[in-house]
Image (cartoon, rainbow, N blue to C red; front, side, top):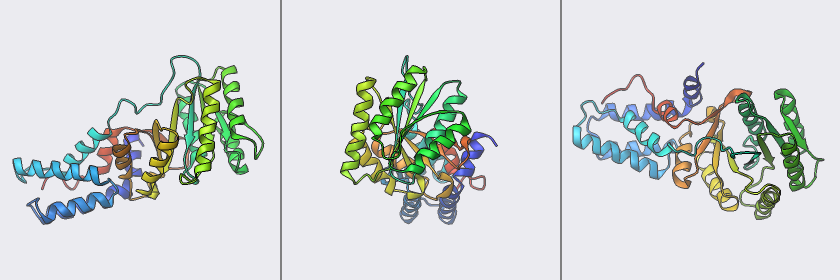
Length: 309
């Protein structure tokens, strides 16, 4: 299965519900105005595209209808184009410093899949022919350390860890030293899950970043927030608060295959201006993939049964 087919399959729950609603609206009423536009707005909001993106799509559809009428008007194509334009960014790829070690901090609340995501990201880097180290800085959960070690063994990735309950900043310090000594290209720091509303935990994360920065100026070079797509727009609140505490450089969206709220990817990037860099669909090592705005939009609004209204 190609990348686009996997993306389309992963977004099936979101796409099926959204396209069904749009099909119902445009086939029932050839005049896209008034109530029809309100229903279109409701369908887009229901898929968690967010108010700003929804209004932009509805406005584009209304403008196209006013200028050309219903003949040949493809609502899904218009929506896809608007989403693509908003998601396209030059910052979508993983950063790499000109020389030496690139440090990536992976943050988020509990249960989003940070540990497995760190390992899968290491696998992607490995497949590019580069060396990735993993740092087990979630020392509050003994299972997280063992989980990362198991992934490291499975994928042949080096893991730097400390004892359960150890200072996460100390583990990060040792990991930076080890990665530099071994001439690694990337160090992926798996941080502990923390509620975005707990100020003391956010301050601890800030401390960890300061320690890394003192040891390696400019690091962490990436701070990637892992979000669970099944939480829908609740993820937006998480993104806002994490972005205040440790300015984010990118997002990783997991569990897109288990939700009908996949539009939250669009809403969060549009509001915060933080690019989506990777998306995940399952538990296998290759289920984490680089984000492609055009393919995402095409998969979200694809429908072979509806071409025109």
